[in-house]
Length: 341
Image (cartoon, rainbow, N blue to C red; front, side, top):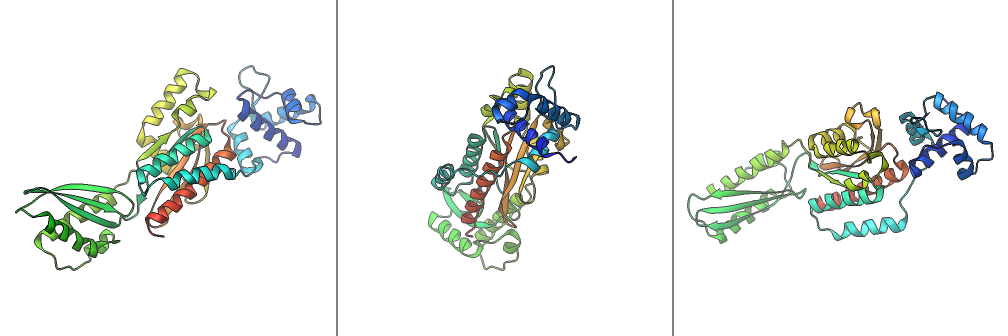
């Protein structure tokens, strides 16, 4: 990007902020009147023309005003944007909501998506945490009838697996409970490799249960897809960019394709920090009209996921980055509680 003069930098920043607020092309007279610039409209017109020539602004259709280009938004985000932190009262409200939920992953994800959508007024995308290697928490064996028992396996990341067991011979609930307790004592906190390395003296039935537990954990470890939680679809549809039926339909179709969403989130989420992806930078045709703000959450080496916001190019980037960063920090804390950190 070419170096801009101080006046050009201020002018570009004013255009971006004004356009984000109004969704209307910005002219020189608007800038002078609303932004209190102590120069003439003609001077600002010259600066707007220079910024357009350099690719930071463009004329939409025949309007006299200008709007930012992807290059203009990128320069603003990297150079001109001021750091934004959620007001303390808003932080307290969000924190209180998270403290009210139990250690239930589904509730966390739904709440995180709802908070992000409400605070950013765009569509929130949150993936459930995926473990690098799941860990056993506890199991329960429940008698259904003389020939069938239910195995309930709970993992440390909150995932729950259930499987029906056909019993070779009737086993009373008392014995099922004793078997559960013995296995819980030996397996608590272990991953699959550690469980396979154990040498235990177990009954034939307990060994059968152990094999089933190991198989369920293997299936989870081999899982490569995240569940994607969404919220705020109506918020983004209210944006003027999506008033046309064809653009509204294209957005809804993209949001309905889970594999597309998961691919975008996985491709662009950074290893650390917050990533801003603006329109065509993504190299994906379906993303040309949108921006995303993404980051990761979780415990390195244990489990984690992605939180982000999808919106139009005309996004309030500073606020969105602040909200995404704050919600991811709360999810970090909740993951720490789940894993006893």
